Each structure stands twice: as structure tokens, then as C-alpha cells.
Image (cartoon, rainbow, N blue to C red; front, side, top):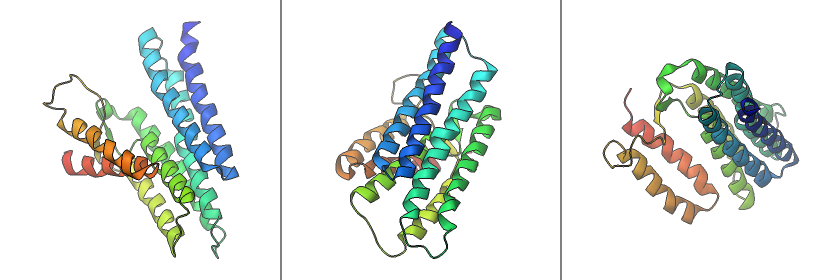
Length: 224
């Protein structure tokens, strides 16, 4: 019985991603973001539970990647697609380019499964971070009715930049602690402390700012 618990949690992640995608297509961006966050919580606990119960399996690994691509690849792509569709763009195919992110997310997850270098850190932007960036950014732009000439093209360019970051050979730190001391954890503590004012002063867009800051800090401090 216990061997099915982690896979059940993973399926809850997948279902959360499906619901997030539905709300994305409906243009209810804050609920789409909420279910991406819920999916991220399930994604965090499925691996933890599998390790605690000693029931890790190859099928669980494959199922986890599938669920992650739905929640952290397809759902944010749907959010961007829906948001771009609200603009009066002369080329109707442009919003569909958002789904390129789902493909790159799948590629990133496949590489992660085979890359033994990513035990304590990441190579490229993790898919949950990318999804949270786009979900919170679009929610913020929509909530505060941000609009100016060329915004849709900035969003599109940003989408392709994200696609690159997902598979780029850029080392990025993970919030994993071997110990709680300052030594060897300086970057992590600086990052966590700097997140507080970003959330306090920027509201929901602060989450997007945190992800952007994470990428910048990783590029500046991490070495290949």
C-alpha cells in the first residue's frame, strides 16, 4: 500500500497542473497561479515521502517528470498564450509560440533525469521556478492593468529567454542545506533575506522579481 503513496501525491501535482491550465485558458490568472503553487507543494512532498518510505521507483521518476511538465511547462505556457491572445496582434499565430516553453520544459526535465551533476544544485533554470515567474508576472500585469506599446513583444521575447535558461549550461544553486552555519551557505542566506523586501514592496510581482534575482545571483556567484 505504502508504495502507492508517492505516486498518488505526484498525480495530485499533475491534476493541479490540469486545473491551472483550465483557469489559464479561462483568463482567471490568479487561480491558475494558485494551482501551480499547489502543484509545487505536491511536487516537493512526493520525493520526500518516497525517500522516507524507501519506495522510490523508476515509474515514479517518469511519472514525476510527466506531472512536472504539465504543471510547470504546459500550465505557464497556457497562461502566456491566454494573456497574449488578449492583445490585438496582427499575426494570429503569435500567441501559440508560448507553447514552445512547454517543449523546452520537457527537454529540461529529461536532461535533469539523466544529469548526475544536479544532485546538490541545478544546471539551468528549474521548471517550478520558471512557472512561478510567469504565473506571478502575468497575474501582476493583469491585476494592475499594466499596458504599454510593445508589451506583448516583450512577453514573447521573455518567453524565448526562459526557454534558453531552462536548458542552458548555467549552474544555479539549490536551497539545500548540509548544515545551518553561515560558511558555504552565504549565497543561500543572502538570497532568502533579500526575498523579504521584494515580497513586501512588490506584492505578487515580487515573486517574479525573486525568481529573476535568483537567476542573476546564480550567474554572478556560481562557477562552472
